[in-house]
Image (cartoon, rainbow, N blue to C red):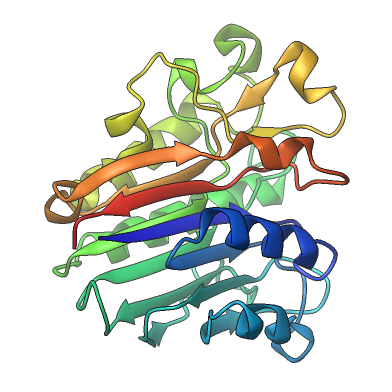
Length: 263
């Protein structure tokens, strides 16, 4: 059995102590981080080395975006796709070569898309849709057992947000984004592990805005996901979100997800 976690950390250098706390407490075999906001040269390698995460693939840039996959299991890096088509660091792919050998693990940070859900007045929204279209064309050709995880910046189901009607015109839950993400799902037959193990409409949020007191109103959205090829999904044993990290001092606005697989 292996366990894989994903977490938009919102600056790995700022929250290195929280990552250490999480890894010590939950001990996943692999952790995929998004929004690391640092170049590889400034990544806190020593923290992970000390905890036994000696295999690392870091695709970073100064101050923005960036992804990193750290692991106790050996892997080889297999790709860094530029689905944004502008050089931003938003993806890294690895293949496990220890336990779970042959599993492809894709770590992605999909653009947020700005504030206005109209590409004619908001270029960022168009970039988000185009990113998803490029991912869809890629997924259409996949033929290996794959797990894609990360911050998708879309809450697809009505029960993935605290107020479906209120958020229909809010970027992350618009019908257009949901339809575009569904095309990506259909391209490979991805299984949404979050909803395989925590079926809708059960509460399953992964993000709360810093602007609203997160627990009192519970205005959450499920923006982070772990999706598997059908053959991989058949081997998933459990999936959970580690909500307590959102109560830590100066936390990320996202919480980690953890999936266990019988590989």
